[in-house]
Structure formats: C-alpha cells, structure tokens
Length: 86
Image (cartoon, rainbow, N blue to C red; front, top):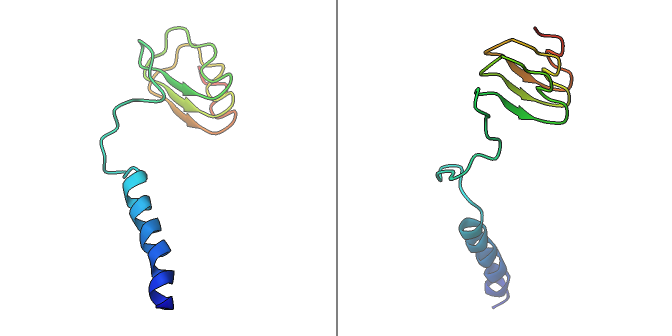
C-alpha cells in the first residue's frame, strides 16, 4: 500500500501542471509590447527615447536606440545597444 500512497501526489502534481500551465502552442490573445503608429516597438527605460521620423525599429534593453533620430528598420537588444544610431 505504501508505493500507491507515494504515487498519488506525483499524479496529482502532473495533472495540475498540465492543466494550469499554458502551452507555447496556444494562441496568444494579447501583445504585451505593442508598437506605436510608426511601427516602433520599445521595451526598457530610455529605449527609443528621441525617435523623430524613424519607423519599424525594435529595441529592448536600457537605453537601446536611445539617440536614434531618423533611422528605420533597426533591431537592438541589450543595454545601450545602437545608442548613437542616426
């Protein structure tokens, strides 16, 4: 009887894990980092701070693409990445 009693918490844990945790295969219904009207997407403090006319830029990390004025179609990942791009 002891092996069966030890098996119950394992099965219960697996059932909870499979029903509670969302799968990567499930459709995502929201975008946590939405783009603005020009297609620029930023995540992090001071990211894409000075964009004036640039479009379709993506930057994640502190001060990534922070001094970009008119650049387009850039991707920057990491702190201070492409900081002085123009």
